[in-house]
Image (cartoon, rainbow, N blue to C red; front, side):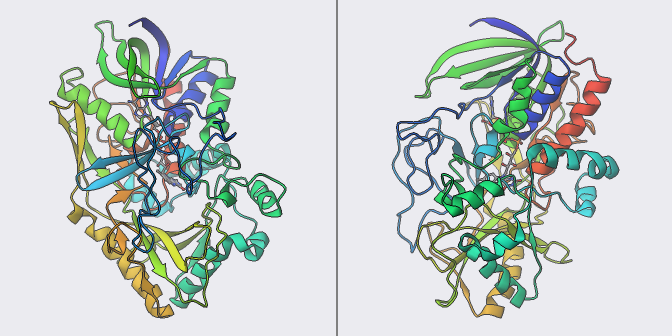
Length: 504
Ligand code: FDA
């Protein structure tokens, strides 16, 4: 391999990595961003960059021979998943014994595959989860900055009320109201002017063409169009794709040394490089950052790392569920993939739930209402390092998901009883009503103020920083990327003002 030196390296190009890259570039610091996934900019043979959910091909998933969609069956039929050629596709499902974690792979990380929901958490819960972070600068400065940079807006309400594409959300709103529950509009980074033109037939459909978890070809302001485009625009930031940082150590002169595997589109390692840097920013996400640090601690490469590395993981209390509606309550064959409304019962003292009203964009009437519930689950998982396999394992039991299911059930039992409806039992591969075995919101593993200082500086090692979702202690009460982005902005402002970043 070759030896290359950069003043700063960022690992991962999701929210934490993208914020770090932009602010380093603006400070005039030459920065390398390493991303294990590909850059999603070139159209495939069908003229499209991404495939849709209903016709998935190799672009859909990260080195799998069959897709592993969250909704795996319909009427118990295995009609959803398809065989595919293994390829560095955009969505990964990382399987641990009691929990599967969905993550985005590619330039933009989770922003490529997520629903774009951009929610600022209620201040009281933020203060409860992250007491070491002063709330005033967050709510006065960093949350507004994050929302502006990400391009969060709210669906125009007149259009929402009139369009067939949100029938499913209006039906779910009316049913929640019958149970005495409050619904709220949730901001999103999708361009609603574009969506309106999709509906009018004057723009190529994306959200209205069943595109989301395998990428949106149009309309979504993913990070490659916002933070990362601005980072590259500084002229200081270089992006290296299909490059996985595997190991991390420190040289006697204090620089960090990374071992980086470059892979081709078959997954074969074509080169292993050593890259050195003065300052290292970890933005590989809850799973990726925790794995890198845990491996470094357990192999003795960075022995001073805190015992807190690997602790404090949670899936934000995620539970997915469906309800069966009456025949006189169709949810629509036409459903926008972009959620814009949620049931907000977070102020409930016993079972706080924030439930996003999710689409089931099957292209035909399903009479189903789908939800992703965020609950307050106090359970936490830990990661351990498996030396024989050189991987990390998330230790999370199915029993630890029980509080999430109980909270979601408490709320949706109310909705069902008020509407004389039942759950759907045919959607998650077996007969369960609540999907508690996967999550979209992995959080923690390297918790702020425990494995790091109150700004993400890793304990024991100067010049080493965490900027991603691994900082959040397992739960934040809403969809997490606005919080991850705002905390990363706060870290970068502090670190660039106080630390000798890029001077080595
Ligand atoms: P993120 O996971 O975004 O980025 C990490 C990056 O690092 C990835 O690109 C990865 O490939 C790369 N990487 C990892 N290890 C590496 C290594 N060793 N070397 C090099 N690169 C490496 N949230 C929300 O707020 N609203 C929403 O609507 C949704 N919806 C949603 C839907 C789906 C299907 C998913 C999977 C997730 C969501 N989320 C969401 C969650 C949201 O996407 C998630 O919280 C953030 O992307 C996490 O941001 P991070 O910066 O922590 O990591």
